[in-house]
Length: 116
Image (tube, rainbow, N blue to C red; front, side):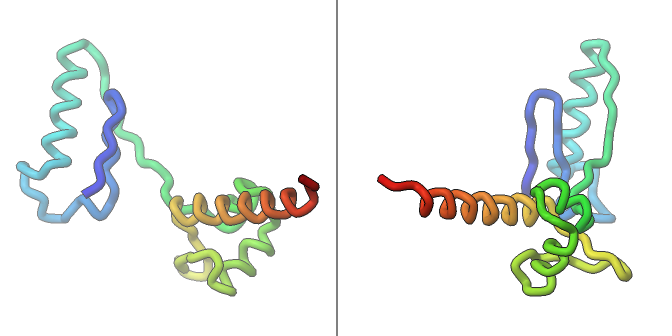
């Protein structure tokens, strides 16, 4: 179970939620604890869905490459993606992993050009 709490923020990932969750589940108890605490302090609580997957176009903009490059990396299994109909979706952790690969590659190219 992955729960992230930073101040009044509780992140509930889909795999934590079951259709038949009882009222005693950990995430529900944490959620209602936050709601009660904020309400007691006179604050409103807002529940907002968070985007956890991205299109190749969005990933391309995020990491500074072309959409065609992202599609090629999906097709050669460098980037893991799922298909929703005819469209690819890339998970947030995979976007971060791909950006680290690109950063490492750039760092090695720069290091090769430097004379020590």
